[in-house]
Length: 65
Image (cartoon, rainbow, N blue to C red; front, side, top):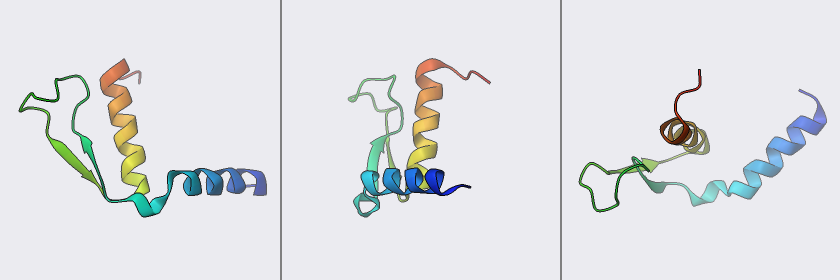
């Protein structure tokens, strides 16, 4: 990777504040918060949060693969 790319990744990482983990996020975003099917998922690391975001986008927009 070039230095510009590494710098961008570093700024994103700092912006997301890795000290804010673990975090709790809803398992699904397409059901009511009061629905018992909507559990809570603990996110322990930044990579887990990124994967969670990808899964949520798949849920919201559909799997485009």
